[in-house]
Image (cartoon, rainbow, N blue to C red; front, side):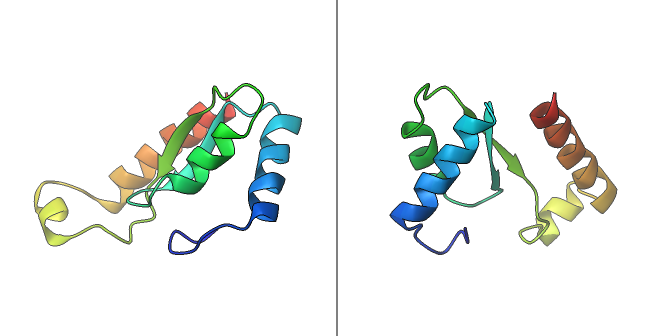
Length: 88
């Protein structure tokens, strides 16, 4: 779902089913997005014990972050670590 849109009941239900059928311990979001949809999904699972992991889409990297040392490679390595967590 887009970070700017509201998810329909059917979409939330489909995501909940996917999380439960695959016993997923994490729900993924993009950085700087509201976690509302992910929280709704988690709240509607039977276990309600999933964690939220965030990936960096690089859309919000600003001059300050670059001046503080943010690099494309560094941010992608952080995303790799998030994906490794999600897949293990």
